[in-house]
Length: 128
Image (cartoon, rainbow, N blue to C red; front, top):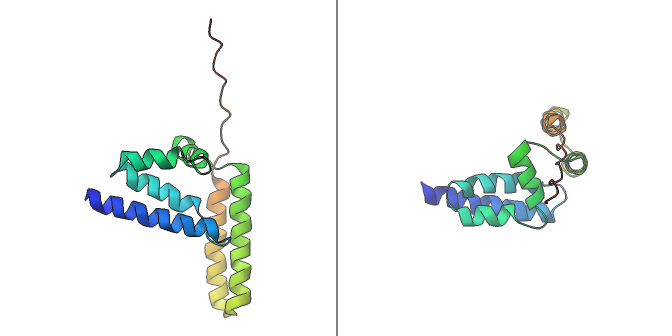
């Protein structure tokens, strides 16, 4: 079972890399899933993702608080809107399909926007 989690973790990392390169596909959600998979299979790769200079802070914030930063919410909303516009422009969908996809994007956006903002961290007390 451990190898299954490990393989899924790498699949999620691959999708996260694609998401980092394409503006209409998210990266962070796949990396959150990768951290969860690696937590069950490889503490080494879990730690590497959590300590990543770019994505680590968002991953730790999600794990510790279930929170999404204001900037993250803004990028997610913009990405979903851009994705829907590209879908509409490129696919020329029927109104039923457009409505279904639009409702899916709206539900996703509502979930992202409903996540709490990060709690401020207290500074460490001074040492004597």
